[in-house]
Every structure is written in structure tokens, then in C-alpha cells.
Amino acid sequence: MAANPVIGIAQTIAIEAGKQVAKKGSEKYALNLLHDVIEIIGEQATTIFGDKSFRYRCEHGIYAVELTEILYHFSPVQQSALGKALKIVTALSMRSEYDRIFIYHCMAQGKSAQPERFENDFFSQEDKQRVVNKLSTFVENSVIQKGNEQAEKKLIGWRRKIESRFGIKIQLKIDSNDADYLRTNLCSGSPEKKIKPFLARYILSIMEQGETPQFIYTDIRFAESIETEASIRVLENSRLWLIGSNKRLILLAVDKENKILQVWNYNAEHKEQLSLERINRVVADDCRVTGGVWQEAVDKEEAPEFIIEGRNIASYDNYFQVLHGFKRILS
Image 1: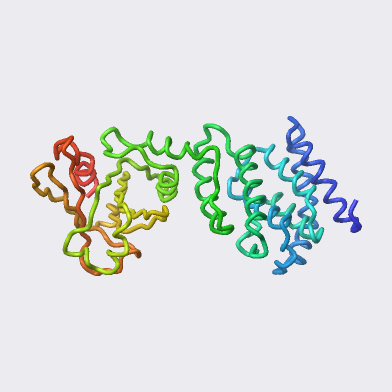
Image 2 (image 1 turned 90 degrees about the vertical axis):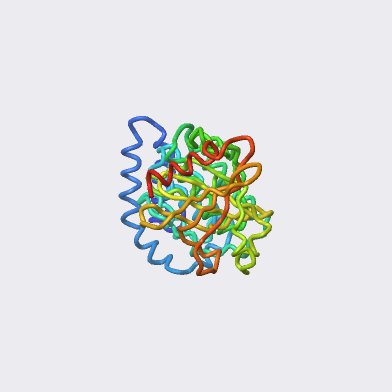
């Protein structure tokens, strides 16, 4: 039992709640009890906690904060996941027991512990990797349920944020699922369907509410009239990908280090102009795309223009059918 009797009570309740949430018929009682106790003392702990992030400058403190963020980000989670998280936090070595109560409070209330407030620059790369591995294991084993499409979508956002905070790329067993999920969403007429997991994950992450990817084109180059522009030359070693959804077109640039930039966008809901022009070639005709808007990656005021190269294995009408169909329906 902790030296502070109030904290000791909270720890005991958390331990018991962690045990009971997995038992049918007991989880509601256990969670309500935890909620009530933490509600009473949690505000005191939160007040004491304040902005003293230095108290979290330890591996266990950062781990607890990130674990709490997982429950918040993937809410609602299975009760078994909450029970396991409570057990983990109870067993951690924290610098202050009030910090542990703060974590209990966040978990009971379904709140974020705001991990971006806590610096982890004191971590070695090995420390960071160890924490990230434990968090990834918890997510895969306790949070992501097979066939839970909503949770898998949330995974993309969580992954992007934690990779940014720790500066470490996360490898998950379900990575291949991103490419498979994207491929199943693409229409049969999409010229490209084999997408690497990192790019598939990014494409899925930028889809808005109610938006689904439908087709992808590659073999894209900028028009000769703008190739000499400084902001365009920066992208000369990048491969361009045109992503078409049920709402918009997005042009991505992917460099050799797999860094992805949004170059151009056309959104039908914004009433932007879009023109598709056939360019006659000897072997296969190309398609010139004009209109839309440049994104921040391209600092240029002139009208956007790029060319999608045709392929000699298909006629122009067949190869660009889905692109022209997009324009006909939405523009």
C-alpha cells in the first residue's frame, strides 16, 4: 500500500478493476467504482500534476502517458484492453504516485494525457524503440480486433502521431493489411493496384470522412513549361502518383527515402476547374491534366499542369476511362 492512504485506496481500486473488467457481470461495477474513486481524488492529482513534465522524464512515465493515449485514441476499446492497461500502469515504477493517479484519472474518464506535452529527448534510441515496441504489441494484441475496420482506420492516425513524437518508424504485423485493404477498395479499372504498405498507409490516412480511394495512376511528369521551376526541380527525383477518390484527385511525390509530399489537389466540392486533354503520340496517347490547385510543396502561381503517360498495352479510352469517368461524374 502507498504511503499516502488516499493513493493507496486508488491503487487498490485500480488493481481490482483491472482484475474484474474481464469477468462477465462484474465489469460495470468495477468500472463504476474506479470512476467514482478517481473522480474524487483525480482532480487533486491533476492539479498537483500541472505542467511539471520533468516528473515524467523516465521510461515508465512516458510509457504510461502513451498507453493512456492509446485508450483515448481508439475509444471505445474493449473492456479487456482497459483492464490490461490498468494492470500495466499499476505495476510501473513512477516517480510520483500522484502521476499514477493522474493516469488512472485519464483512463477512467476516457481523456487524453496529452503526450505531446512531454519531451522524450532524454531517451536513447534503444529506450525509444523498447517503449514503441511495447506500445505496438499492446495495440495489436489488445486493441485492434480482426475485422474491426474502424479501429484499423484509427490505427493510421495513431501511428503517424507516435512516429512523429518518437522519431521511429513502427513495424506492425498487420502492415500488409493496409496494402490489401487499399487494393480491395480500388475499382477494377485502376491502372495501379500493387502499392507498398508505407504508401498505402499514407493514402488511407489522408482520406476524409466518407471518402474512399478508387484509382491510382503512375508514369506522370510535369509539363515542359514548368519543369525548370525551382519548386518543381526539387521533385525531379521523386515518383509521382495520382490518387483518385470519390471526391477528389491528389498528386503525390514520393522520393527515394519514401518521403511523401502532396503536390496538387483537385476537389470537386470546391468548384475548381479541371481539364483532361488527349495528346496524340506514336505509340500510346498521353493525357494532359490542367486545373486544380498546387499544394504547399509547389511554390508557383501559374496554372497547374502535368501529363499522365499512356501505355501501349491499352487504348487511350480504356486506360484513362476511370479518370474521365471521375471528371464526368463530379466536375
